[in-house]
Length: 216
Image 1 (cartoon, rainbow, N blue to C red):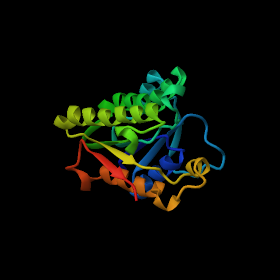
Image 2: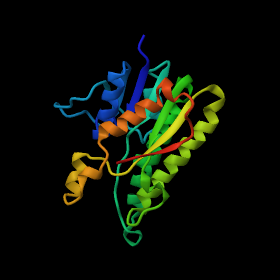
Image 3: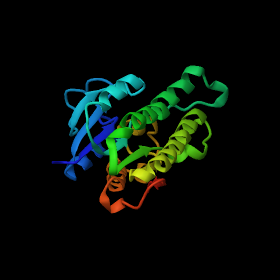
Image 4: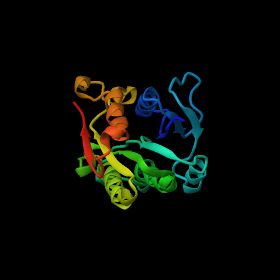
């Protein structure tokens, strides 16, 4: 029987790369999407439409599975704003899509992860603070703390948790947002995916509670 991997945000640029890498490694892959994917969606895995900001919806999704070997929390989003332009809704959006989605998923899948299982949370190198994106950076700092807390809590039962911290990822959305940037310095989604899947593998069985920088 194949080991099972869950990828949240599995129809986005990073999520598709992570799902594909899990599939290539022989996992049965299930991914979440916030809405039905486009007809030309080419990513692997069974797609489940789940509102990751709704705790009951995430728990209902987790209830579909008896045992999960790996979970990659790739769902998230970015919005920049100077502090003097920050709005309540802007702050709530960053906390919702980054921190809340990761927290709900880890809580819902806690009992599905057993000895030898692993979870990876996608943070950001902005987690220590960044100008003009305080809400985003703070939400990613919370994600890093969440991963560390889960790693300590689940260590006695052999479940590992790590955070990966990419810099800018080379996605179509980021290229549109920063048309003048030097994209040669951006990590490819496939490079980040390689690290995530390795962290969930037996080769990384001694690695937990870390925040790992990923970039070029």
